[in-house]
Length: 307
Image (cartoon, rainbow, N blue to C red; front, side, top):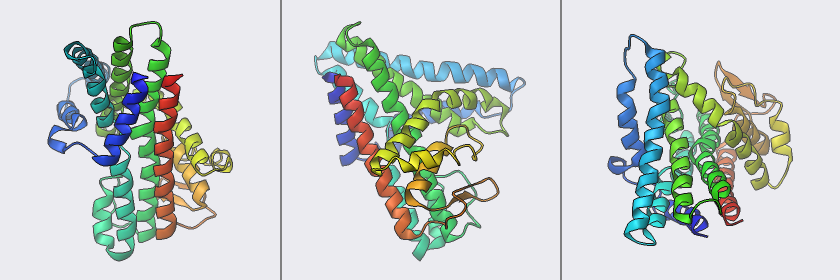
């Protein structure tokens, strides 16, 4: 019951607060820890592998100790620390509001929409058309739903379920929260250094590919459930492997099928090529679907950890 309360508490904080301030945001602080890794090294692959292994592990250990210490201070302390941590490593409200704003402004202020797209997608937006900007916002909302919400919730739920009844509840809560933080740290490292042009990020990228294999496909299923139809995830199988990532294509292709729109990263991939790029209305429907899928993910995780 405590784990379910933590999940619902994190969902409530996301709904009410959105995100912690950047200056104290744990993910932003971890990003500053990772930043020095992105440099010139004599043996970049070795340095990158060490960073990919030890930095997320350090985060997990710190989180586990913090949750445990909170429980020692007060019976509810561990739950409070776990709730705040899970809230910090998941994101739904900010993701949806940012995507919605970019989509809306693509019609009225394309220059500003291109600038604000950078908060969602790491691509050069200077030459993107209004439709391509909306496509990027929809794609990113689907991909970030997997990375920024479903993956850490999945890790929390799986670990909490596996250790329930085998260890004391405070220990189970500490392990589950540490797992969620570890997954978020792995994903953060991949987003910062996991590019083909950066040998130091090769290990981080490969580890993220493994970690995200199940959550990305689970996100596709949840999006299809939120759309109240099995068709989107079934159709997604035709396009999911077109993006270079082995995982990101699944939620993006499912959303393309659910909206019956074309999603395209120019020169890289096209999903559902027979359709048209999303209109403002279709883009907003996509964000609404991502929002529903996010709330469904919170709810399903709470139910799983109770069971």
